[in-house]
Length: 258
Image (cartoon, rainbow, N blue to C red; front, side, top):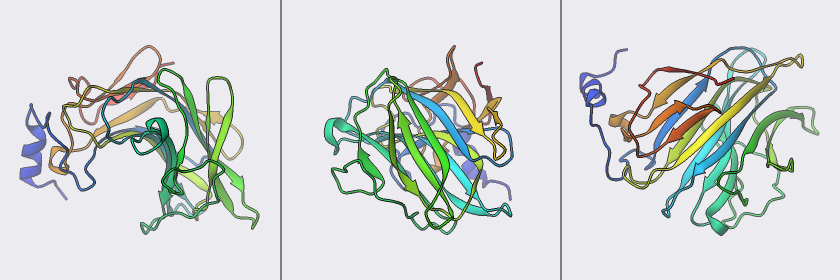
């Protein structure tokens, strides 16, 4: 089905929405980088670095998302692992590992060793520092009952791995992967930038590969998105930035720097 004419018109406006709060359903403006390539995976990982941190008391969330499936290829929901700038947590820094099944119900998981200032099972206290690379890893592990569980962990630049917890979706494989920035700030708040680099995918047979390119997506104006977000390549990886000129158009393919 084609998009309504009024949505195509809104999305085609060159200036778009560059000021004010995003009027989306959840109050955020999001933009995404979807990995190319197909096939089952048992692990995905990527390095995230907050190059220019937020300066306002608003929520920012940068995450690696895995879309799960069962052995027949049927959707089994998805989960997102990432760092948050969360003003209600100590130092405004946190980590989140949570998701939903294919019906939209919140995924159940094991208890996390990390404390949570707000008592949220998904969002935990975690001290991260701007300018430091963090390795986000989603990997299949064996649950005591014999089913597949999915472990979310973060490794810092010194090689110290912090396991957030295990989630228990119905799926036993990853079919799709996307990285995203979800920003609950005004479109005109000070520019914030993060960089994604060194993606890795582990197959069921133990072989590894990496995406050759990412498909770029921006939340549409009609859905509340800001028009001054951008994803572009630098010498290290792909930078996602808010409150900037959009250099890469919607739907473009960005080659993964080697």
